[in-house]
Image 1 (cartoon, helix red, strand yellow):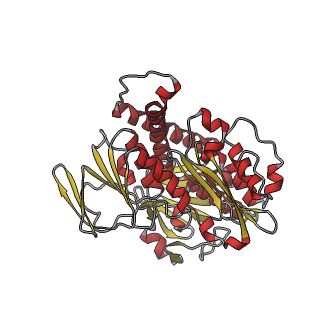
Image 2 (cartoon, rainbow, N blue to C red):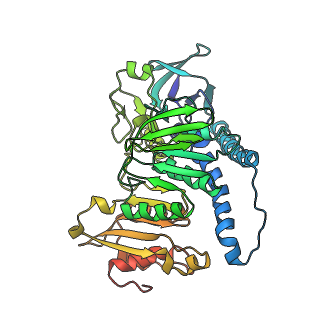
Image 3 (cartoon, rainbow, N blue to C red):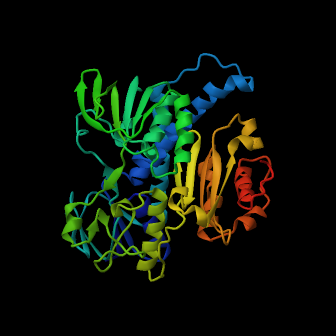
Length: 449
């Protein structure tokens, strides 16, 4: 009898397993594919491995000569790039396998079918796992809908199987996935077009954030169509013809559907009587409506981010072990590995009343370290409560924004005041001083503007 059986070995599942083991519980984890889930095998890790290559290519192509470096004959090998991606995935996966063994977690390779809330059957062998608690961590699958069921249309899962780059690609969706792949392909001179149905790309970010990224992508030849819907597409031997609702058409060798993912909720989960509203519904302790059944990560269909799934796994594990804990979603960082990178946390400008807040922006172009890097696109934006000066939100468009945002995460989570953060000495010359400049702007007295 296990204290907990976890179905799904993605970021939520494996972290939940480790935390439970650390709390002295006997744990089994069932995974039908590879440990690490979408993030390690088809998402975060392989895309970031690809983008590391493309960011280096961008640096060489756009800055080398300005730095005084005469580099000629720049070339690349797709198979070697993909080997780098595969190695990054393999090392991450091996790391998780090691952690499973280190923590004494029983890992079952196979499809876990829920017989009841206390029994999971391995489909391939018929073996039964008895458990006191059940954790649903089934993850998600790419969203595919008409007219994109057409054979040959890529989802994000398919990109990592490519043997060569297409000459042209239409990316359907200008969200995180779409922007990251547009960044990658455009750095290798692929003809890229993004089609976004919303008012602007990155619809969940503020429009000024989207504009900065749009500016950067357009510099690299990316064509961006906003407020645009695709009505149909046809496949030909050499590619696709995409018909827009405007009556115009696009032609491309490849089409990438990048409109997000949806919860993976199999029939056995539904048969349990679990409450579902797009995803599996839980409370802040990650409990479902069925006693001793928990759900974490993408299967919830809420904030579908690996770092959120990880913390949900910890919260579920602690509650199973009798340690009271609840999820706090007030300071979840969102990050995009575009060029420049994007990161945000807390409230956005579009979500606040102007009379209640102070909004301060500091441009990357005014930062000394950015000048040494030949960077002039981007900014840090801080939203603070007018009465108290408490930080409510931060958005960054900058090199290394994905690392810099942690100062904003801590500030928003612990309701720190701009003036208190301003008193913390920021190292010079660094990009983090753009945050300092925005903090100073909350009081209306920025020193370097």
